[in-house]
Image 1 (tube, rainbow, N blue to C red):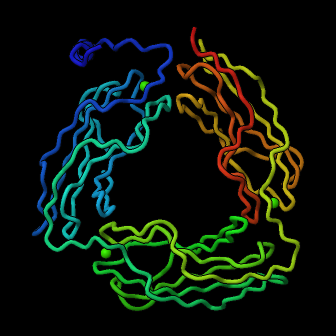
Image 2 (image 1 turned 90 degrees about the horizontal axis):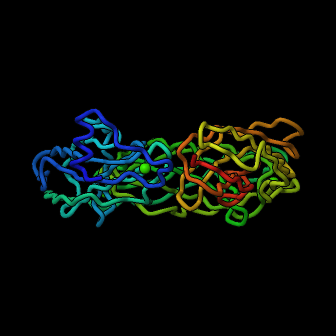
Image 3 (image 1 turned 180 degrees about the horizontal axis):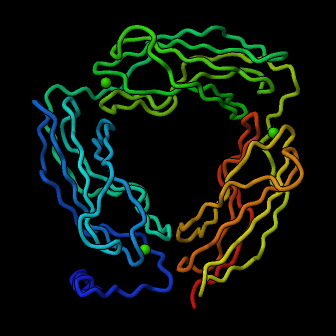
Length: 372
Ligand SMILES: [Ca+2]
Ligand SMILES: [Ca+2]
Ligand SMILES: [Ca+2]
């Protein structure tokens, strides 16, 4: 159906026909901005962005950002408001105030997380349009880790927990925006986040930040690494990835558990679901074992060919115990989803000492009949 015909139908109060199964993500029809170039050399500048989105069912959600690919600086467009049309074909608006000091050159407006109400999602970051930015003296470098000190380089948690205190000096030409700290045991993947660091001396341009937390008992022995991540300045110049700060040694006398929990078996209320005429409920029970104790996990239901997915509520332990028990959860699958084989997957499966199973674990397949 052409857009003009669709628009006429909307004007006439007639909704376009909805297909039995919609497996396509929403599409970006057109966009407009208040200016194709922005000058922030003397003052901040406002960027107003309108985008028309269309979908057979309904636009579910999306986000947009304004990014300078050369430096990685980016700003999110907040709170899109639908200013005209419908969820099937409508115009959405948001605006940002671009501050002084950002990078000069070509910036891009990108849409991401674009999906319809059935969870048909468009991949990745979609480049919508390019905007030229002129800026006086631009800072395009992320903050730098200058030096650090720890309360101790060895932590013996054989008989009691220990306490790790980290002081770290960070500098930036503009101002440190934010960063996070963790310590990780590379051999097992066990890791613990430190509380957000607090500036205790100096300035946002050159200052010392402090964070501290307990090193618990029962974790892996050996060399751990303190790492900084999410390090960026207030202009959003971000350092890549995880930055090694320094190693520490953990001595853990107890028999240490370095294995993630295991899925032993599963059961479902039905191996096929019929949603041709009404939504259908699916209950799944999963037996999980762990030497120490299962911390928890998440479950989703996904149609791999289209990427449609629904999260189950967090499973609860219904029998047994955290070392060997059955966890249960249930969801109601709506009408209109994709036909065919869907997969129940567990993810985020970890024990209480943070041994985590990788990725998405297939639990079992369920056949979904969606067409009348
Ligand atoms: Ca769709
Ligand atoms: Ca900087
Ligand atoms: Ca374990």
